[in-house]
Length: 457
Ligand code: ARG
Image (cartoon, rainbow, N blue to C red; front, side, top):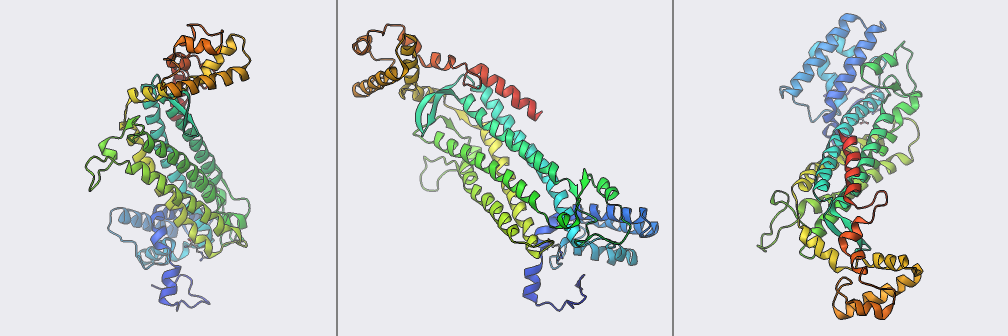
């Protein structure tokens, strides 16, 4: 195919170099945005008397025909074309003749690609937000079910203090709510139109950038044409938001993997979201969670590559920037794929509440409460802490728990002890008495669920 740019560079490009240069494999997915941008551009050119209304009409009809033909599979995007912008413009000219050749007036592929990417990514951000909301909804539903299900809370992966499964799940819902906010913020900052910046230095034509931006649903226009065509910070911001979603998904996945092991067995994943082993018939493997954890590195890599691609670039457009799309598209594709399986995986897992409670009873997670009880009897906290430590050591030596240690053993350590200590260290009491704001009680979890549900409705 003839080169759009066959001027001084005469288009006699080496075949391998040509293939190296083309981005159609990656950017063909923006054909809808490219066509919408060109429709708006033709309308603006006509409104400003830069092209005739007849030419604009021929262009718009031609572009709409191309759109419906690609949508319906009647027109195949040529894999040999350099990029989607070239393909659409050349197809238009083949179809409508002269008017097609007027479309690229007062425009460059530099502002065109900057426009298309923004329009494509703002749709992707909306879609990812809807998936995030789905996951948050699933977490709320499961938290509602388990708001009273006591389990050990951990630090250093050592049993620490009592929480509920509902409380633990809602911690993730809070992380995802911030991810939602980050995507919203990044998408809002990105929604400023670069079209009309042209190659880098604007144009001598009397264009109306605001009119064109409005037609395309932008909130404003890039204020500096060099910046408009050469900034890709929106890709980095979205990439960072996506990387954090993966961080959160990966931590959650890690817990689901642990919890579904025989060592924990707090949950069992549904067969729909696990796999078997080809050799070990007893296995039910958490592959979806493991893949999610494993794919996190890809998204971090996309972000790092975006940052590195930009760091040394002089203004304005440089071909390096063609790399932006493959990276940010991969980040979106990966996050969306993970969210798509994680939400129903969480929605369908079963909780083994007896096992959580058993773990909660065995790990001395009421030791802080015992120390606090002694403080209530007048002992300084540091002394109470030390004495409780001795009691835990004694329980370990006797193979028992604080709940089952006889009163004499307690009184041998301190005269302050009486029978009421057993109520104070009962696991349910320990949980229900943690009434501080944001804590693990069923009421607190209820309130958290209410907050998240308010955000996602
Ligand atoms: N395919 C190019 C990209 O994705 C379009 C812009 C080309 N501009 C240029 N001056 N070669 O960045």
